[in-house]
Image (cartoon, rainbow, N blue to C red):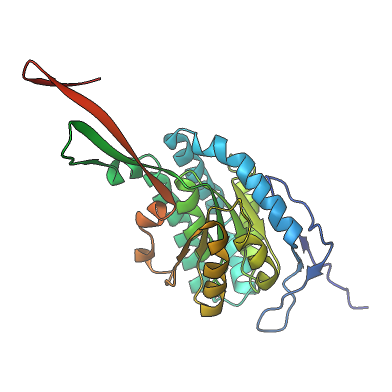
Amino acid sequence: MERLEVLKTYKIYIGGKFPRTESARYYSPKNAKGETLGNMCLSSRKDVRNSVVAARKAFGGWSERAAFNRSQILYRMAEMLEGRRSQFMEELIFQGANKASAEKEVNLAIDRLIYYAGWCDKFVQVLSSVNPVSSPHFNFSTYEATGVVGIVAGQETSLIDLVSIVAPVIAGGNTCVVLANENLPLCAVTFAEVLNSSDLPGGVVNILTGKQDEMIPALSTHMDVNAIAYAGNDADVLKALQQNAVMNLKRVRSYDRNWLDAKSQDLYLISDFQEVKTTWHPIENIGGATSSY
């Protein structure tokens, strides 16, 4: 008798744990050959809400961590991903990539984590400024994290677009809720296992699989989500995100980029999810000398 393969049931990632979806539903996406990729959780609106709660709870501790420590954790994520290169390559090939493109995507994802790890303790110094004013004050502008960021992955790649958005968002001290690629979800769920073993506090990154058209309304209208990042190029999805974001004036950033291009990484993906805080510090002239108090 021919043996029936036991398909793996992949879980979602919320608050540093791997629960099954609250809805108890699943779906089974297939690759171009018609082979089933696995049983994926079909996440519900309740799962989205639970993820936002976890992200908000983790935000205070993560944003207040030393920037150097955030850098260490992102570097550790790269180390763990490096150790599982072969697994990620196999998953990419199973989902339809050839060996060369799979190797390129995994290597670039590792390098991209290291790139943003290097920026963690430097971007504030580079972006901040001392501003000229016409009053007796010092005027400083500096950056601080926005809060909870909703990330909607694109449908073109399985790993690199996810890493390319998550890394700058958390490098800047934000937490996030990620809606993974609907049709190519394998690497997103496996990446959650990398996060879980890399010293990243639970709740900083939460990853959901399922139908994006079900989860996007819940995520983009949630009043405790501060910003949305969209890594795809679907005009209808972007329009829906922008319209829903009006409810609490969420910042929406869309990135229609070729994430496999080395130039798709830059400092401004960090600053896109930062708030500018300006401080006025009075000075006085005493005996011809300028002093502050």
